[in-house]
Length: 401
Ligand code: F3S
Image (cartoon, rainbow, N blue to C red; front, side, top):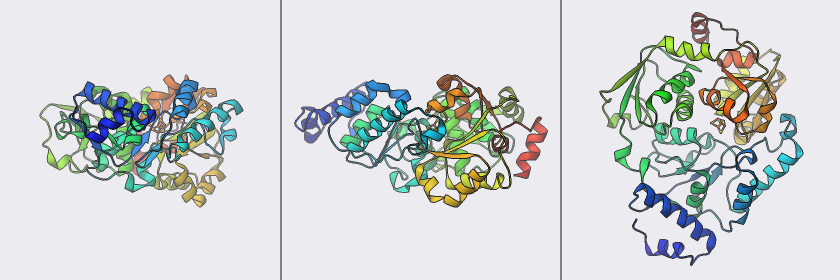
């Protein structure tokens, strides 16, 4: 890999051991994946924040680093709401460790806004054509596919190394040749709401790590694309997809001849197969809800008292920017938590079965939290129980939305 003289000096340790370690990590990745050089980046989004996932070893590693990031950098969700963790049932010991992790990142100059949807809070972090080093799989998918920026799915340490150096190795989705679609996905029915999570859940499992191009009858909103990409990144390893006529790079490509077709009946099966009657927590906001999604939850909860726990996850900025909306939601008994989510927080573990509107959470909750998960419409999740029993009823509900 070609390095500039300045990069060589960093690698030789002339600027200290932290930057040397960061350069060693970036050049090792570059060598493994055949990068020709490092490429300057606009921002980083760094995973490895929840004490549940990184433990004491991770905390120690971050605490030993000594330097400052040189590009805007933001954190992935932590293991708890940093203010309202007691309401989540998180214990004191976990909270103390979690706060130490956040402080260690803060000392490195990282913005401690813990979210997997940085694009909802600061549009300057990623624009079309920007190179990035983002970690969280749904954020990576959104950045590549909906924004048209360029990022591989970084691990926490490599994103942090990129933040300290301001560059990442130039391979994978940074290169034009890896951004072309390899398979078409034809969907012959109209879609809305949680259908996109179900579609992503099915399509990801079928296309693996390929780049799919969707041919849809409906015109998805950005929040629906967010749900589609998140589910595909969880059930498969899709980090970039195109939607014909919708996503910014789709115009550059013809749909590939190899095609898989997904039908309504298969989408309905995702709901039916993952349908249960006994739910003790509804968890929405995977990925973190936008202001618009919070507002629609508030409308659906108007005049309602929830019977079970209902938790909605979002970023701190979105929660703070929407005090009236949050008040309306919480008047129903539902809670709006920030900085964390149902998958990376240990608070989910005490429940028996979680109902979610997210294809990604459906995939991850059983493995990460050891509890059952079911997929429901947004309306059912907010009610805390599945009331739509048949595909026909779900269709009526969609049309009524
Ligand atoms: Fe975000 Fe947690 Fe889902 S990090 S994408 S809300 S699993």
